[in-house]
Every structure is written in structure tokens, then in C-alpha cells.
Image (cartoon, rainbow over all chains, first blue to last red; front, side):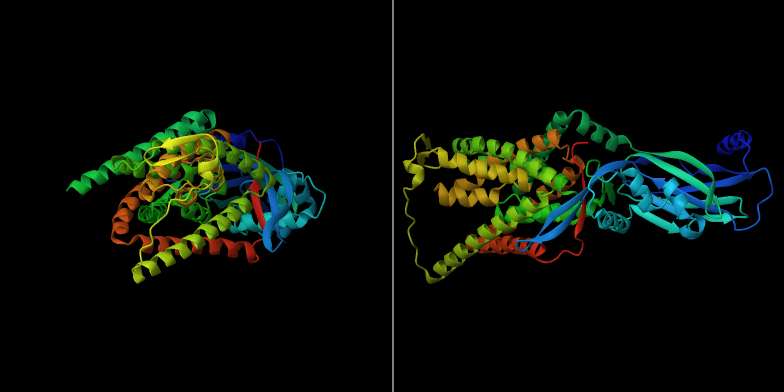
Length: 252
Length: 305
């Protein structure tokens, strides 16, 4: 079925030298109670009307961006002998997850100018997502944000992570961590020739909590009083249950 | 087995949480404290966002205190009247605490306040308890029994006096209400029941007999932490019910084991062990504030979106 859709998509393509045709191993990720992260296979083909151009081989860049959220980056400084949060920088929105995979080192497949225009690399994507409020030394703050989020797997750069066959077929896999925020994960694919983007494709991976997770989350936001009362009822029941069970055990 | 927590939005090992709940439960059963002062820093450590840890811990304490208070009601060691007076103060304090908590959260200083409160209160109470129990051990070794004398302090001079039959006291309601307010504020800010402050305050400040102190403290803690849970749930949406269930299952089982271990130890030995533990937690948190952190930057979610 998916291949059929792909075929129709191929037929409906406008006339361009090289065009991306894309497939995803799944376009929905369900966060269940036992969610341990997910791996998404992104694959596709290049459709062209003319023979493969000569020169540098085809470059492919894949980015996946999670939903943006407003964040504050704080720096600790020593005050009165103890380390306390001091200066901070606010960002209107920073993606909760961002992955870049390329077929070759990023600098080779994308010129800095194109990176600026398309906001592909992590620093560029951050700049586009959140206008920084303060006009102080924000660079060290964004560097810290990238460093921390790379460490916990929320921001990923995988240079050479896209495999390209015969300059036509490409595939990569993006690992989504277990600590995932729900929302629309915007997936972009760029085809580049000598650092210039020749074709671009965009789609959305839908990441949603389902089942019990969905129900509890919705309840906690829409009926917080009931949710709180339910939490208390469970706590009281468990406390009573333990006490009753202990009495039974003691009698034996 | 990994479990995805719907509100904390992190994936954690369920057995780790059951184990942590159990371990803290054993300690709380042994010493008659809620164990929140140990659990909340441990939750920070395994990566639960501080706001969620504090709110959820309040919910877990409801369970362990309720379990504990039932045993005390059967033994008739709960002073309901005193508990209710403390509770009035406690509820005012909890409401104040949540307001302070939200204000500091917007300033980005909530971590500091929580940590400083921990260092200060744990250090002070641990130190006092350590000295007091060391003296008690020496006294019991030398075999001299000093009769305890009823002191007529401030609590007897202030107006609005009330008779507390179970405690055998006739004192002003002002000191217990103030004690309640202080503990309520701490409960909301630190995510603790405040038993480790309430118990010494009731013995030393209010002059209540030791046998009714734990039950009465637990009785009022149930309501203060229940109120705190509801406030956090409705204003911050930070109570994670899945996390709470995992912790309290381990906690209530651990508490039963702890109670059995506790009955085999002497009161002074128990107190000195608790004092050492409280001092250790306080010392660790103090070091964290004094030593330069390896990562100076932290990321917080901007509130009010």
C-alpha cells in the first residue's frame, strides 16, 4: 500500500532535475507505559528526468525536530560561598528533540549560507526556533544548551549516518529516546549538490501518548481536581491496605 | 522493566523505584518519620524533574502516614484535638508554601531554596538529636535516672487556652498553630511531611508526652500533604500518579519490615542512627552547594505557557 502511494507520488511530481520521494517505517509513535524509545527508519529515492549529473556525488541531509517549548538556560555563579543560579537567558522555543543525519560531513554537503537559509545544523535550528530575549553573551548559553542536550541524547548529530546507494536510494535511522515529549516531529529531507539544496521534502511524525498514559495526562490537565482526588484516593487505599494486610500477618 | 511516567515524561526502571520506595519505607518504619526528606533528593538524583518529585512525594506521604496513623488510632495514641489545631496552621502554611514555591520557580531559585532548607533543617535537627541521644546513652550506661520536670513556658502564658485531654495539656493554641504553619510551608516547598520537624517541636516546644507525638504528627501530616498534593495537582499539574503508585507500593511494604526492625532496637540507639542519617544527607547537600558543579548551566522550562 505504502509503495503504491509512493508510485502515485512519483507520477505526480513536478518537473525538476532531482526530487525526493520519501518513505517512513512508521509515521506514528505511540508512547505506552512500557515505552523504551523508538527507532524510525527514514528511506527514500531520488526521482530524476535526466541522467545523474556529473561532479560531486549527491548529498542527503535528514533532520527530525521535536515540538518546541519555551526554555530558560541558567548559569550558576558563586555567591557568598555557595553556587546559585545567577544569569539566565530565555528562549521562546527550543526543540525538545533534534536530530541531524547526513551522508557526508555536514560542511561538505551543505554550505554555511544554505545552512543559514534552511536552518539545518543544531545552532541554526535553535536560532530560528527561539529568538533570544537578552542581548548579552548568549553564545555560551546556547553552547551549554547544545552540550547538555547532546549528553542526554535529545540532540543528535550523525554525520555519515545516511547511506546513499547509486546516488538514488538513501536510508537512515533516527533513534528517538525514551524521554520523549509528545507532539509533531517535523522531518525534513534535503538533497544537495555541491553544498546547495536542490530538493526538499517535509513530513510529520506523530508522537502521542496512548492508552493509560494518554488518559492520565489528559485527566491531569483537563480535570486537575479530579486527578488530584484520584491520586489521594489511591494513596489512602494503599495505606489502608498495607495496614490491614499487616494485621492479618501479625495474627498468624 | 522500564516505565514511562506520564507527567514527569521520563522513562525509569520500575524495580529501581520499588526498591527506593522499599528502602525509604524501612527507614520510615524504623524511625517513625515519613521519609520524604530522603526520598525527594533521591528522586532528583535519578532524574525526576524537581517540581514533579516534590509534588509526587507529598502524595506518597499521604499513603505512608495513613497506614501509620491507623495503627496509632487502634492504640489510642492520637490527640485529635491537638492534631486539628496543628492542622489549621498546617493548611495555612501549605497554601503559603505553594505560593512561595511558584514565585521562586519563576525566579529560577527553587532548587536553591529547597536545597538550603534541607541543609539547614536537616543539619540543625540531626545535630540536636545526635547530641541529645548521645547524652541519653551515657545516662542509661551510668544508670542515673533524671526525673523529667514539667516546664511552664510561653505556651501556658499566652491567651486562647484550650484543654488537650489525650496529651494532658492546658495551653494556648497560638504555639501549635505557629508550629503547624512552619511545617506546612516546609511540606509544600520541600515535598516532605515535616515529621522530622514536627516530632521534636511537639516534644520540646509544646511539651506533649512522647507516646502520643508520632500518631498525632502523622494524623495532621495526612491532611497537610493531601492538601499540598491537591494544590500542586491543580496549579502546577506536577503530581505523577504512576510514580506515586510505584513508590508507595514499595514504601508501605518497607514500612512494615522497618517497624519490626525498629522494635528490636533501643530508643536511644534508634535516635542516634536517625541523627547520623539525617546529618549525612545534610552534609551531602551542603557539599553540593560548596563544591563547584561540573556543569554550571541548567535548563528549565519557562513557566506560564
